[in-house]
Image (cartoon, rainbow, N blue to C red; front, side, top):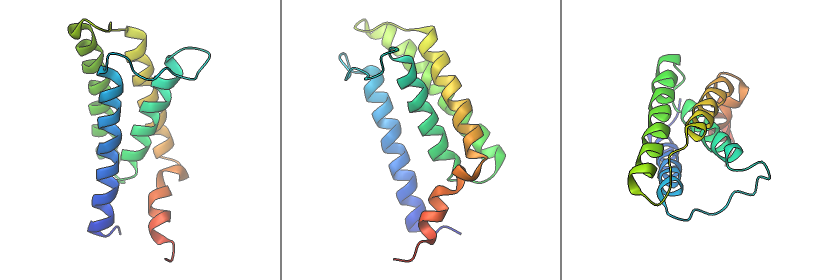
Length: 125
């Protein structure tokens, strides 16, 4: 069982990742992706990472599904906000890459990768 202090740290770091995703989505000139295939792999990887991180914080499937739906919603809302801001444009394919990444992260969260944070906590320090 996670101690409340460590659990708060994991949640804090997760929310830092969410803030970073929001900033990267809404900043007028985000750092360019280093992927030769364009920014879709970056969307996929970013949302996979977010989902996998939060999937580890609550072992129940219901909680993981709630997080997945929230992250999919976040990706869609951020694309809409990009269009409203007028500096960047919404891209349906970005929203799809985000959603697919959430699905990949959800699946990975149901594998042994979904226990990495608990294994870190169990290490003797």
